[in-house]
Image (cartoon, rainbow, N blue to C red; front, side, top):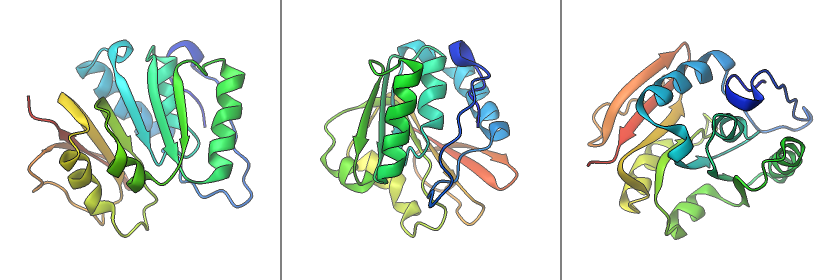
Amino acid sequence: MRIIGGQFKGRRFTPPAKNWPTRPTTDFAKEGLFNIIQNNFDISELKVLDLFGGTGNHSYEFISRGCQDVTYVDKFPGCVAFVKKTSALLDIEDQIKIIKGDVFKFIQYSMEQYDYIFAGPPYPLPNIPDIPDRIFEKNMLKAGGWLVLEHNPAHDFQQHPHFFQERNYSKTIFSIFKALD
């Protein structure tokens, strides 16, 4: 994996492979997504939430591109330890808040609002279809904000009331939901 843009462009990081529970977004899909984000937002002004953060791939990319306020959430201790270590190596600890915990409990108790939320759950997770509803029920997105949910072709969110658009990168799909202005 590598950071594809910004201050840390080209920087590679390799998480430990043993018992690693993640499925990192491919560089191809991530590059396409960040092109869309940069055309719609000033990344340096965003308050970002990275759910099911895994390796921290998206968090690093946002910070590399100037974001100063990223919250990373994952429950797997190995992932959290890796992100803490990588954040220290990149000297970005002031820009990232790392939370070890269950994403659904985090959503349930969250009192924060974000400009951009990325959720990259494990594809076999049975309650992927619940994620957008839970986020919108908790009013976690600021007006005009986006929720981007990464999933496989087994899910279709085009009938969701907050659905905005879908981007397809082979078997990686980003469904984009928008908070109403």
